Amino acid sequence: MQNKYYPLINSRTVAHLRKQVGNGTLKHSYLLVTPDKSAAADIFMLFALTVNCTGGRGGVNGACFECAECRKILSENHSGVKAYNGKFNTADVNDLIDDLYIRPIDGGFKLYFINNADALLPAVQNKLLKSLEEPPEYVIFFLAAANEDAVLKTVTSRCEKLYETTFDGDTAERILKAEYPDDDFVKNAVLCADGFVDNARTMIEDAAYRKLFYECIEIMNGLKKSGEIINYLFRPAFEKEYFKTTLNILEAMVNATIRGIETGDEKLIFIKDTDVCVLNKYIFLIVVARKKTAFNAVSVSVAENLLMNMLEVKYLCR
View 1 (cartoon, rainbow, N blue to C red):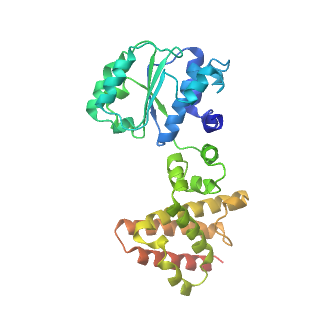
View 2: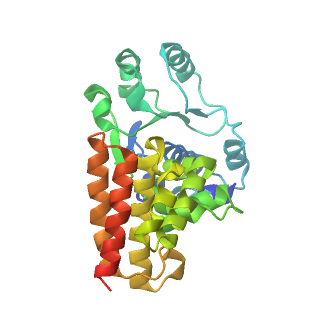
View 3: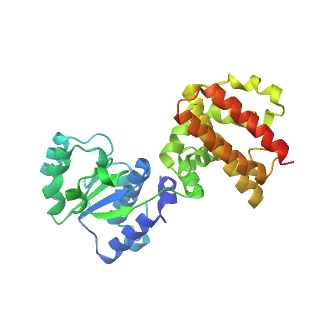
């Protein structure tokens, strides 16, 4: 279990919370703004571990992951740590408020985590207000939202706001490698998701996405002559249903290949036998194709034009 959370230990949010635990300046209510729901849940778990750890590494040094309190939290059997990662409705608020005033049995705090706070109905958010503003001294609320503007101002004003943006590729890869240790597609998914762990996880688990990814590699490296374009146009990659995703994959591949050429990292070079001049022009062509699809242009026609222009660019840049 330790490996699952390790990549997030040095994130900005966790470091800030660890410092507050260490110097005794914890707040009663937090709002974490992040595009990654699963990362928000993991950050809360690290926070709960740090607050409750009795293994000699609590506070500024983080959690030990091994003491009785840490083991209870990791096994989701700690009475003082309650996480709501799914829907949260009025009945849940009522149950939470009733539970607030029962003093903690395990540890010295009761921590409540509410994910997707930006999806809560206004009535549900309003019902939380008094508890957020004046909770019992042993209570800490931890809310998470992708969209801060969708959370009522009366709620955000009662919370310390924390911000965790997308993760760098190495961190995202470490997070997902802990979950999918034997899956070679993790690096590709992280590349295409651009630091969004949730999106990368979806890609890893989506067989259709994997097929598109490898099909894009085949197209980019197999197309040599204009007469061959017809052989690719009616593949799934260029069907209307998948075309936007295909363009995103192509753009990620091109950007990765540019980085690979510039840094000498062969693992990032998905498009062989090309150079940065060609690849930069590919980016422009993909952007143009994306604009055309936004105006409901026929995907096969846009794809044909894209591939033809790519071949022309490659020829002219020789």
